Length: 270
Image 1 (cartoon, rainbow, N blue to C red):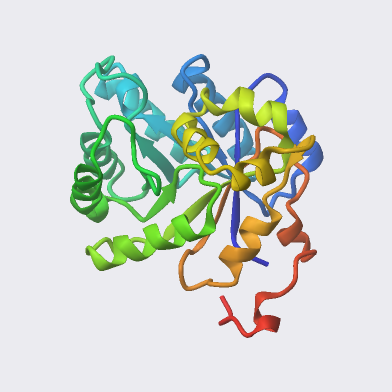
Image 2: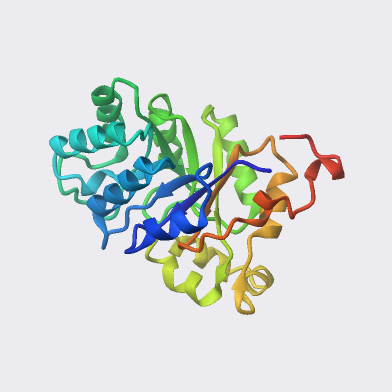
């Protein structure tokens, strides 16, 4: 089994769906989409935390209106047994409050929680449409002392993910890297949701790859099995899988041990 976290969207009815389909041993991350907002993310996270799930809510810096809101969120996290968040900048250039990026948010999380709540940060194997690669790397180097791990933006290429993790290590970013992988979903749903969850760049990259694009996006359903198999074959490259589920919650094949054991092919054990 490969360590896996499942990202869910805090839509109506998701708590009941999780209860019915997901074991309590599963770690869940709760995304923060613009049309839901932080309040819905936190309401879902708190409910699931109180039910006994290990939950990681996403906090979008530019959507926080003030530091008092952050303090309240951190209190709610502690009350629900939530010990980790995922800090991102969020959409748009102009923040709703004092946080223009994730760096000051990370600083306040560390200060207000006294270190009791840790944070993950985002990485971009395929780059970012509005930030240069050098600036992205500098930002990770600046933030890594306030974070515990990097989660990559959704990517369809194992070599790109592994090369990115190796690049971070060479450049001095020592944080563990979790690979952001799309779950097994209908192709039309993957395409429709891609822009909403911020992976338009990834799909533009994919569309330029011809055969790869046809392989991944042809037919009725995309499946991440081969991508995860490639990642599992080099377990020294990444620490686990961050699965973008699109709220399809059946357990992935590698969690069910349906995929071949990479150790059987001579790969180093994880």
